[in-house]
Image (cartoon, rainbow, N blue to C red; front, side, top):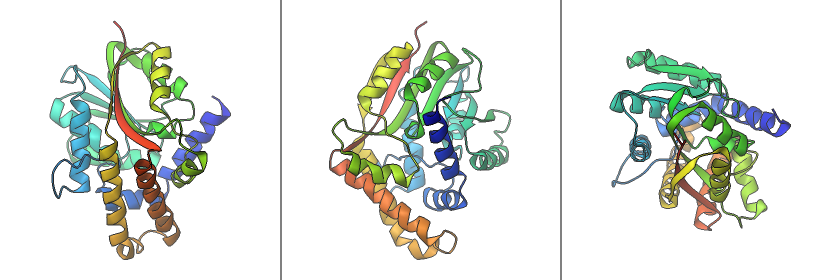
Amino acid sequence: MSDKTKDAIKKSTDYYNSSDTDTYYRKIWGGESIHVGIFDKPGISIRDAARHAVTYLAGRLNTLGPKSTLVDLGCGFGGPIRQLVSEYGCRGIALNASSLELEAMAKTNNTEGLGDRIKPLEGNYEDIPLNDAEVDIAWSQEAFLHCGDRARLMREVFRILRPGGEFVFADPMATPTAPREVLQPMLDRANLVSFGTVDGYLADAKAAGFVDKGYEDRTEDFLTNYRTIVAETRARHNELKQDISEAFLEKIEDGMQYWVDGGEAGHMVWGSFHFVKPD
């Protein structure tokens, strides 16, 4: 494993194992998901918007159902995989580098009667602890921005998928012309090493052997999501600081605003990819 990969894993693990991070996402996102939502109805909550994003991404798949095994790469609190298992009947594997999030996810899985259908798995997606051709579907939401070696990531996902298997994911990405000085505050906010790009992901997937089934740009949803998050965080600042450090709140408020500013300036995009492993 390269030093860059090790650095990315450490940064991601340190960030998500932080009690401030854990508390913030639970209070603002609702404790089910920490992913970008789709605000497709007036007055929709952050929690419900996150569920709508899962429904949207699941709609890109052709083989999701009771006979399929799906791995969520970077599962967070596990809301998406619980939704998928409950609504589509698939079996789930939830991969995460954060032991704190995995522990919380496993408790919720058991409470909701899904403990026997979702397997928690500690590890990282650049060295996935699964056998070759073990799963039918690979899934991820806003996790690969923490990746240190995206070409290696694509090879790993290709390896664990069965022939004919599907791979869908969504991620915030930089545009090719985005200035480093604009991106750096966003990288610093979430302990990131670098951002992927649309062309970069497409090239790495092709090199790994995948067939491209289409990229869909949903940057407007990304902007709506973070505008809503910024407003909610600022409105609840005094409440949040009872349980979260002032330094963290200031950093995350500024960091979330950077997402909005970057997207509005055309430096950041968000969308979803769909790839298939040939039979």
